[in-house]
Amino acid sequence: MPKVEETIRFTVSLPRPLLDELDRRLVARGYASRSELVRDLIRARMVEDAWAEGEEEVAGVLTIVYDHHQRDLSQQIVDVQHRNFIHVIATTHVHMDHHNCLETIIIRGRPAEIERLCLEIEGLRGVRFAKLTRASRLEV
Image 1 (cartoon, one colour):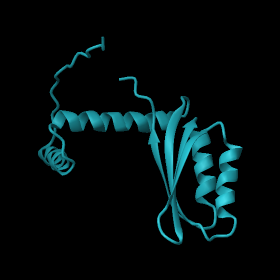
Image 2: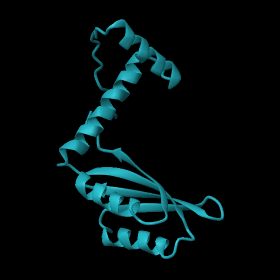
Image 3: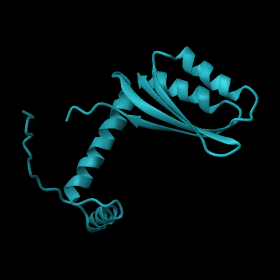
């Protein structure tokens, strides 16, 4: 039977402009309540902290768009992944149009290792877009 977590209510005091901004974000992002938005903001900060501390294993998704006509680029991307095969969990490859491919590369490891792998791929000639989405385990 799943464990039911206790929910605690607490009061937060905010200046009016900050509360107004919180409410704008709540509406813009479709949250049902301030509590849901605040929980997500706290979790996002916890992920940032896990990456900044650099001690525990984290995960990330590197999304890249690249010119598949760029000589040897596909092979270079694969070579980087093979050199880091312990950290690469899975990849997807999509043909966007005649010139562009989109790949997602799911990576697990210490933040510095993931950052290094991503920088190596981002720096390849013909990579037109690269973005790392950071994630980590959240114990709470």
